[in-house]
Image (cartoon, rainbow, N blue to C red):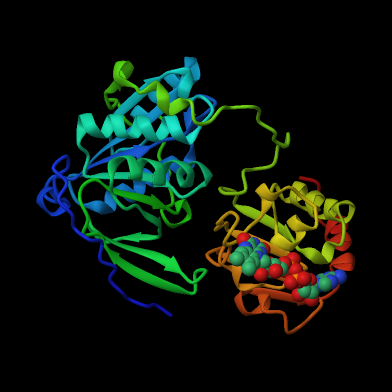
Length: 354
Ligand SMILES: Cc1cc2nc3c(=O)[nH]c(=O)nc-3n(C[C@H](O)[C@H](O)[C@H](O)COP(=O)(O)OP(=O)(O)OC[C@H]3O[C@@H](n4cnc5c(N)ncnc54)[C@H](O)[C@@H]3O)c2cc1C
């Protein structure tokens, strides 16, 4: 079902920025980029891909920040990895290493004030969701979040009611128009890292006017993360998800073993996370991660609307549930009515080692 409705953002007079309609002819986009291990992260390239739909002739700059050789390598990578990137902007400072939202939002404001982009795009992940509203507040505009389709410089589609309806939104506010996009809706193109002989220029942000006050509001303490060789849940081609039916963290290891055999990422329902079987960064759904892998395997997952909101775009969905009326079967391409405590051991036995 698709609902079409227009949301009107009140137009106020703000002398600092021109109205979007007046600059729609010259679209320029700043993509707030993330990098790791000397390369731009795949979701950032999805944001670049999304920016293509804002209009022809859109000049796309990617903002990367952090410090050291990893940042420089990522800048080199960004300069050559996507045909739409026309400039790479680098902010080299310790302030941006830990992805704290306050200094990043201030950085976006600083770059915007100098360059005057018509659009600023980020990915709708935890980093983007953290930075975008703060940057929007500093720039005094309303952000449009979770965009899944773009049909011009100011018309966007985003899911509402946990993904049960799609809302078409027309942005009528002042420039810049700030967007967060779902990376699963804008798959990155498969281009070789060295596809381009001529690299996009790389420039440094002059941070002399950077407001140090913005970094005092939050402080990096430590990063706690699980050491795992499994693929990232947000980008994995195969995801194996377990629900409350697993009953314990010990039993949930069956899901992890199966994921290992399939080279898959592990996902979980909120019920499984709340029960303490796995950490909450594995939660798939409305209040967790949005995934769209080639193959999504759901074991003991009821298929609550809030869970389905996070995985319904998967290419092939396979569900195993002992209740033949479980709602998950309504979205599944293949369903097996059975006990997961019998099905998973059998799969583990019959599947070859990775
Ligand atoms: C505001 C809000 C946001 C939410 N956000 C999320 C979210 O992001 N992600 C999310 O997942 N949920 C979310 N929820 C919770 C959601 O509503 C459900 O409660 C949750 O998804 C249920 O998880 P589950 O399917 O593991 O558990 P249950 O609903 O308890 O389902 C367990 C299923 O396992 C089956 N089963 C039991 N034993 C076996 C067995 N041995 N073999 C096979 N099948 C078996 C049962 O038939 C049942 O269908 C949210 C809820 C709210 C209100």
